[in-house]
Length: 148
Length: 110
Image 1 (tube, helix red, strand yellow):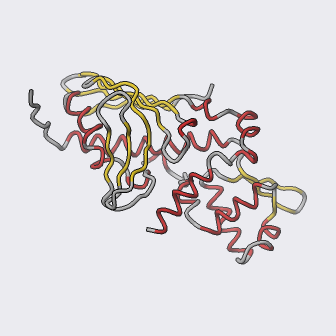
Image 2: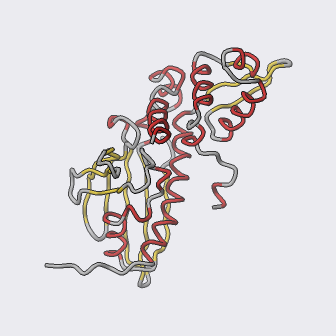
Image 3: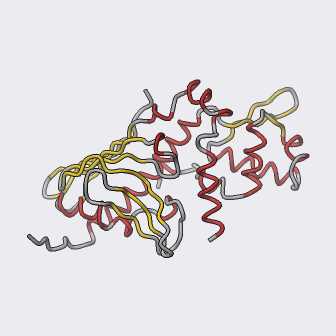
């Protein structure tokens, strides 16, 4: 198993606000360099329900789906499949919890499912040269960003 | 951020057509700088510069073979992607905290 990415940190606001900033004000904080188009003025949106999409919308109205919501439990828990710049079959799992802590909120991010991308030999076997699954998406994204 | 020190961004690294061409060439097997330069419209020093950036981004590794240095695509593609995403989360978490702490909660209706 490939080690999950996990982070936790305290935020000086209530869980409900933290959940709200995460899901409905994403545009204000998500690093634009980590989007598909990297276009100035793009929006990041969560459709607030299980089965809803996480996506980016450029000012021209072009949309790129990043994932799909699998748990929507405001104000305490949120989980989504994450496949930004990849095929949906290569999705990994993101879970965020918001827990009251000393008048603030303890935010915990756990990003798992890396083995779904294949590991070691399996990854290399499935993707000739080890990179076929990754590079086209990177390349396409980079080119989109340059062309704009 | 301290944990990002020295780490190149694979996304930026691939934002250059020559670096993408290098990666394409390395897919077919390990190559030396001179070998790569023959197939590219750029000089050897330019190829070396691009390789250094690709290496910093974790996309390419190198090894000495006799007097030559051979470059190859990083074997552990998944691990490279994972560590890239780890950087993304670090960056996103810091920005999220600032946004959450400096905005007022919206009034909820109903």
